[in-house]
Length: 149
Image (cartoon, rainbow, N blue to C red):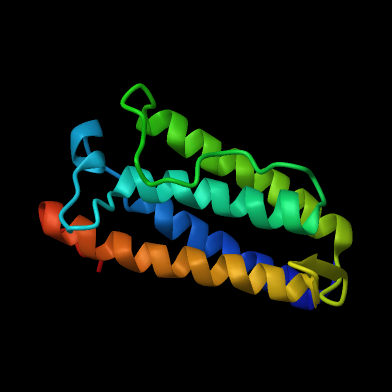
């Protein structure tokens, strides 16, 4: 793995951990509580990010047929926070394996008939993860005042 990809993977890992941290100390009910009109909630953000990881790395980069997970931010009531955390972490492991297997930012990636490279795919997931973690910051502050500062 090149130093560039190792660096991008460290950045992605920090973003992933930041997203999960937003669930720390919350009840199942609070994690599903939405404080915005769109219905976005913390549990749903983690469910969605699990899908994002799988779609980009397993499907787009890895060429597998269907991504795991659920795109929606509406979490089935039977799914626990523990299960959401485990599924998200499992998606990281698979993503990391695929990234490390390619190891070079110039590794070709194709999406929607357009040619890109591995660094582009990592950047897409990193951006999505950071964006949704920003959403999570606001929702968490609205739930209990926590700003993680």
